[in-house]
Length: 257
Image (cartoon, rainbow, N blue to C red):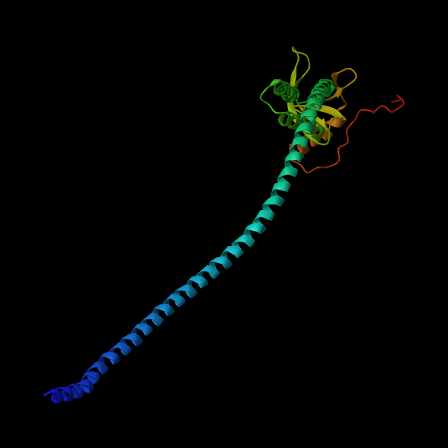
């Protein structure tokens, strides 16, 4: 009996070893699968790290480019600030000069106004109301605290220019000639600012302004046609032409006439 049991045991050992073989195979397969999974996970981590590295590299490159642009912009700002500082210095200097100029300009403008006022008073008596109104307006402007120096100076120059233009043009106006009791309405011809002539409305009488006596004086009728022609030129009815008129004699530098 004992021998039989030993034999059965001996026969059973190979069977048991054959039963354990599949278990070992499964274990090996499981190990391989786990290894592959681990490898795949490792590869995924590597890929993730690589993507992260690429992303960080792109961000680094972008940050480097942006830093370069900021450096260029900062240099431009430095140049701009330098230019602005120079401009501020220039403006401060200009303000100082403007204040000094205004202090000097006001007395000059007052002298200019006084000169043109006296000039108009002593000049030939043409457009008297218009010219006096211009002077009075300038006086009011000079006394106006709201008016700027630039506006005052501009208006003064305009007045001077108007007076200058009178000296190189023909002019015509309707005026009264004679005393209050015997005043007659006439057409007055201005030849520059050298002389004034008049012609009655009926064309029968002519005269001129005598600067020495400051009076109107009659002249020979032979000048009536020339005066009439001058009036038509001044009114732009006739084309400009040469006029033959008795002009006053200009005194020489030594006092001779």
